[in-house]
Length: 344
Image 1 (tube, rainbow, N blue to C red):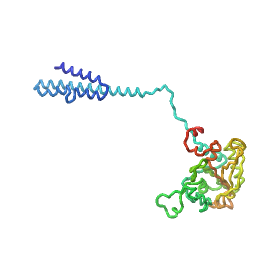
Image 2: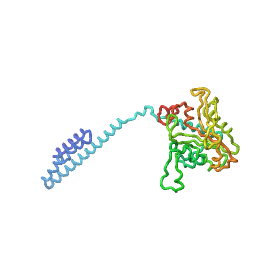
Image 3: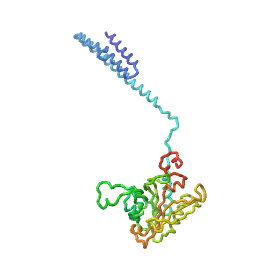
């Protein structure tokens, strides 16, 4: 009988060693320990025995069961280990290969131009200011001497925003806008600083316009210099020198063409042309400028009889297109890596 039980253990050992996965191991387990398994059948036969014989037989069968369960656990662990080794082999990394490395990024051309503008004006003593893109009507229009019936206030040009939640009646009368220029920073900067006021304000602006040379969102740099003895001649000198430094060329001609803006008087459009190159000989508009209107000086909290100054506003995309030879403004926002990699 003992010989038969040893044979059963060897059969289990052999059967378990032959399987290669958990499903087959479960079938092999059932052949010995299942409801109809070989060992289970022997355990049922204990009921036919009595006394010492039953006790001795039960003890022997229990030892066999423990041995078979131990063999089963060993094989289950061996299968898990084999599966892990196979996975590690399939996912093995060849550390002798050179690393792939991360792709090298670069600054956007508009960012590069803004940094260059800031560097040039900082070198001559200008501060750089930043402010909200969602602006009060007062700062965006009224304080800059733009009357209520001016076309710039039209829904065709300006993005208006509803005020959130409940607001006081006097505040509700003043709409919110996506700023149409960075000129509101003239007023905000003047509220926080005393003359002389010498500042540029680069940033995003918004107007209802979209084509090859216009975008609903674009960038502008506003410049302001107010002091007791600042004239239109200073404007011409500062802006002309800026263009020479920005384009790194001394052969740039600059002209100031009479124009009209409600926030400057007198006002001018600033044009430039290169002596040669693809754009050589063509006059190109690059800025609007002028002497700060006396009413705007009053709105800044200053005395126009004492303080005078100039302001200008330039489209940063326009300057970038001229510097880099880009003929379609929309390329700046298409996220085409073929275009952007040229500036990395």
